[in-house]
Length: 258
Image (tube, rainbow, N blue to C red; front, side, top):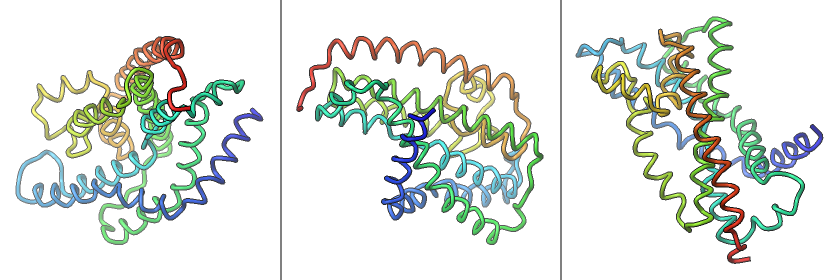
């Protein structure tokens, strides 16, 4: 517990030194608001199964989910391996991954106030989209968002471990991002997808990185227990793969660049 507190304190102080950069990162995540305008206009003149106000709430929830679950560990870990900076961390009595976990959590705490400010501005501009989720719904959505962050971090950290064999492990994440962009619900809620595509997508991990927590947050009807079950199943798959790659990678690592 003392190690966790020390790590979080150090990384939070570090993140506060780059508050201007955090503001830019938060502003860079406004893509859902742009897509919201497009879908609200489309819903006003077509049949998409959702009203313009429902689209506005959905994309606001997408913005919040992305602000709370953004992950960049693959680029950090890849640089550590290529530059040999992983070596001193391997000598510490702590798995190096906890440095990255603490950095992400600290960044989230530093970024959250500005993200909430953007949400307040959103409701000033679209007061008709204001809603108050139920206490049970809000707590459930918050728990799922935490699970979403854990799954996304685990997936990206697993790709990052390929840096032991390749200097461009991040290329896997960039290819993975294309599937994430289309199937996660970032560019459109799954309700507007063809039924066959939607049913297939729900067995992949992508909808549970955006669509599922966002739908819970706005109170849409989703199969919560199935969603949590699929997330845990994918989490188990990536956990096993992660541990195997970690052990093999340590045998292969030679501190290149150190």
